Image (cartoon, rainbow, N blue to C red):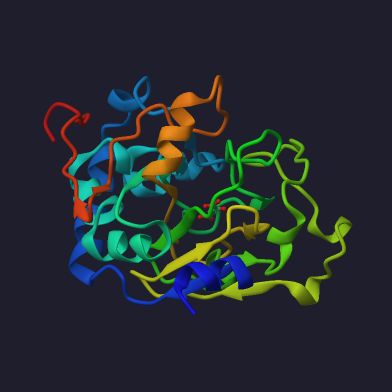
Length: 273
Ligand SMILES: O=C(O)CCC(=O)C(=O)O
């Protein structure tokens, strides 16, 4: 079975060791520099959420000051090279999407600082392909890449395999980090939940309609994860024809064209970086 078939059938798969320890070290150093210069990025990155815990917001290590910094790996050339467009990640994405790949959305990092990183509640990921028009719902490459080891106590991802067969389900805002849905009101039980514990550099790929969440970080260890959805070039062309697609990053430089990884040419960079 191809990775694409596994994704469509099971709703997810896990690929271990996609990023090396060196790549992860480079990404963390860069993310720390960016977090330390965050004011520069405030009007350039659509979602920057400070840690809910006040003490963490003032922490000496800038990595601990945030719950979520979105989109940055599509706007920073170092994070692009060592994470978003890393050749091993793109190779994996090609198994699902073919040789032409664009980012659809995401590109950011859920930071889950120690002891206070918030729950990311049960949800399906944002997508303009919601089956509500005549456009068929495509297979997307919706993934999470861990920069830290993730366990139950620091926010390992939890998924409900099979929930992708529900299609799109209505979400509501209940005060969490974003809108949410209750999977247990849709025929699933806590026994259906799969927790995926990961090592740094592992990647989880799930179907965009799979309901998933991450619990709060109650440990003394941080848990940074990069989340994005990639799509094939055909879907990028479709989006360009849509009147007002929701759930789409405005900036979508190609990641890979004809099987060749692309460089990021239009990046943002704080003075001094
Ligand atoms: O990193 C996390 O904790 C949450 C990620 C997530 O829910 C997503 O990528 O949609």
